[in-house]
Image (tube, rainbow, N blue to C red):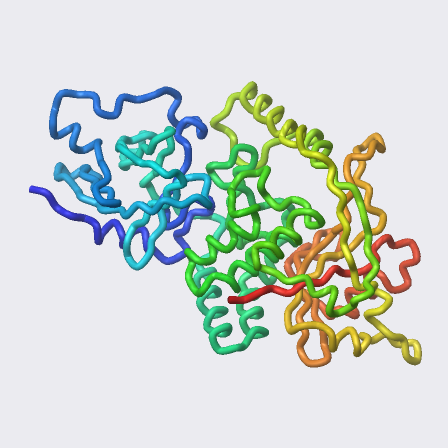
Length: 445
């Protein structure tokens, strides 16, 4: 007797987003990563060992006309289960990914050729794991994320409904409501379980920093209304060409995040419109030096020995050895042009407010841009010191951002009037090196 649990499997995979695992490759609770690279599979396993035909049938699955047909006792009840997965070959991804689309399982395959796939229990947890060529594994077990709140799917749907109704301001506020009040934590996101150098979860809604907040909020606005779209957008916003590797992450706003997201069509530079004669700050970005001083891995690497961790850190430090220094040039809207003083009171400059779109992204520019080690040796210039959103609501402009403990008495994701922000950070601060905002606007499709 052969039964088909396809509907049951889909029901598990299409759980509400609260059960979504935080790894970026955990799309639909199906983890995709290299079994050998993760340290789970320490040596090659003969997946079709044994003389029993039935045993072989439970471990082999092949493609026919673009579909994968799996026969295996997935739930351990003694009966073979059948699953059908459509294979789609793509050039724009670096690792295999399983997604759900229109109630179907799709295996997005990054190569031009696929022949035979195998099935086994790589992590010895009793669940069926799919072994792909080049030793990649699709782990078919399910885990609850501690970092993604169930309200994410609700925020995605609500923001998309606002966008469809032409209410951009309302869409932004729906998306921001998910992050409002969350504690500040620098660098809380990474490459998830598959990360070679950073295994922090790739989706986090329980903590945030300034970059994570704008990336995830922008991904909600570009999601199309579903969690798959959110995840796809987030990858492309955070990584060059959506290539989920640490060295492809948009680490430097000056030469990575801003230009790459303009090129990818997620944001538009509005400086030529709001201030055609804007001044600029220039600096030298040395990724070679920046990587070379890194001294730790991020996330859980408890599966590695101390020797393996040290080797991995040395590999991380060498990532920039062949990367030439880059010249960063960033135009900015000076802070002093954003406000006026009348009768000793500060208020926003009406021309500045009028020039802004309903929602814009700011990158705060620092003219004293040198980043040095503890001995005073120059490592790299960092022109952008902070980022967030400016939201125009009538004559008011509000800053939405994730603030650090040094920026506010309460380290949190919050909002405040721009004039208040300027009063804290610039007005009357003769010694400040902060000079203004580079401004762009999100492109919503």
